[in-house]
Length: 102
Image (tube, rainbow, N blue to C red; front, top):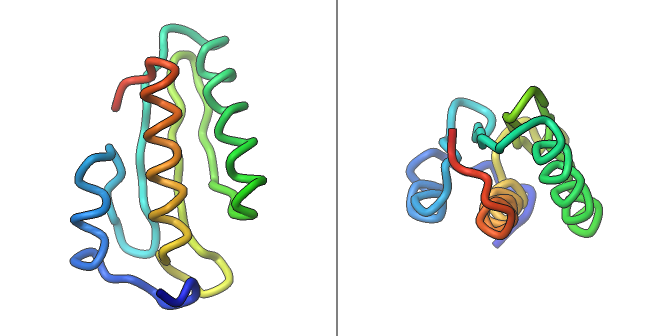
């Protein structure tokens, strides 16, 4: 599938069903709760490694026991398969680290 083609919410629904991410306009939004600030930072650190590997970086909001991600392919102005792949990887990291959907 073309990594630059913008996807509609209908096209992402099945892939996102197992994640806390939701397709909202031109981005995917997902948030996770952790035990405290340190665990939130550790979770974000693990996501940063994967984001660098994928060469696709999320916008992030970090707080005490909470990390929120906005995923969008800024180069095309919407959600692409790159965002869906990152959402799935973030969910896997959250499962490994015990971060819960918020």
